Image 1 (tube, one colour):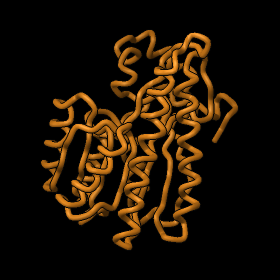
Image 2 (cartoon, one colour; image 1 turned 90 degrees about the vertical axis):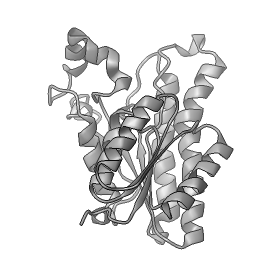
Image 3 (tube, one colour; image 1 turned 90 degrees about the horizontal axis):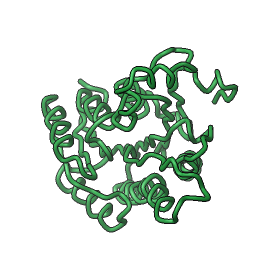
Image 4 (cartoon, helix red, strand yellow; image 1 turned 180 degrees about the vertical axis):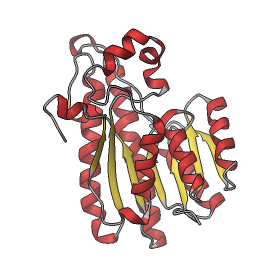
Length: 258
């Protein structure tokens, strides 16, 4: 019997990478899993198939997490079709623009903030309303980044969004602690996902990107998924408001250990 047996999870941005790996890990442990995607329907269909291969129910649908009404409808649909909702993983995100502040237009900045901050706000708010209405405890796991702590030039939009997500996680954890619902944050470093595809495809660029990582390698989506699985499980019932930095030791090497 899996550690998430009879649970229902919703994972945003699960058409590939960390989202897909997390969906598969949750399904392996008995959870029914709903996933959403922004544009990669083919990738989402593959994830759905991988979930169903674990012998559990799966839902897949297109969703723009920046659209408040669409998020509310989607979560209602998950609850109606899968019989509830116990776990929320906010993984959907956009990368930084690589544009310096003086040259960045408002739309570019807004797109990053709305996806990486408003998206989790909309999903968390609706999920918490459901938990309160059903009088149950839940698990919220937000996928952030080490850029919540470190800044890079040309990525003010992304850095700001991930810093905001970390403190949003901490604030929500305080609000929900007494109810038994936990809210935690995972901050990955360099992970082998489509978001880092350019570096992955270029051996020299990948070598440079990993040169300051004490582990001397990039992480795997499956490694992030296993920590998400722990945070979604009963073993983490007393863990809330925490950030799990998964970077192969990079932050310590930079003198900014979390």
